[in-house]
Image (tube, rainbow, N blue to C red):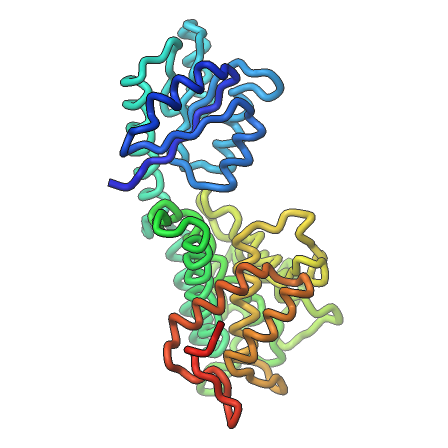
Length: 378
């Protein structure tokens, strides 16, 4: 069985030392401790945890506030409240308001603590399974949209699918470089699902900003034919752009992609999809569009990955007339240069080199007399 990571937060150092000592040799549970809620939030960004156990009364940020943040930012993680309060009404209210998985009353016995951690881990896996089960309305709508895109604009549809596949490969590779053999994709299902959906929809707005929309037979496509769903059509209409029209500002397609994504009934764990669709042309140095975001702001890992995957595929499979197709090696070199200039995450670009190397072993990465074999990549 895979190791279960649990985080316990309490301002009592003696309690933490005692708990850490008891679980030190546990082969099933990897327990980490923190005496500060703020430190705990930072720890949650560094590793994936199945269960968070938190004391109720702590200085600065209390357990109630911490667990609210955990519930919002990491909805799949099991939440266990540890308290010395025996008032049943207060406990019932906390369970209801915070969506707790369980409550432990101090003093806490080791066997009971271990049992609650195991129960929490099972609850987390059940939530992950429900969250990624492809039976929801939004998954069906998203799938139909992609089919429509492929029928109306085959090169765009192929770009979306390639970008989605590359984004997931890049994410898995980057996670393995951090966690090594401990990386397990099943603990990242929500994250990968978000990245997958965003990658499939991120450039759908190009359907409405291209000079001409045609099928493979040459028949023009109308807006009503392009999107069969009333809410999505309304979302596009609010942007004010119709097929064949181009506004003076260049990033209008991201606004349309964003509004289309917003019109879909995403489940809670997929709420970041519209954000990723809108900002996939942003750059870490603030040179991107539409908002000129930078790494000083909110530039989450999925956005860093999608921006790189989208750019790489656009360089190696251009969809617009007048754009030169780059060989894979040249595209990787260009992205590496831009990463050094601060536009992209250097570690992710390094991971992209590894993804291409493993996916295209022996394949030529440079055209013409300057061909380089994949084995020569760094």
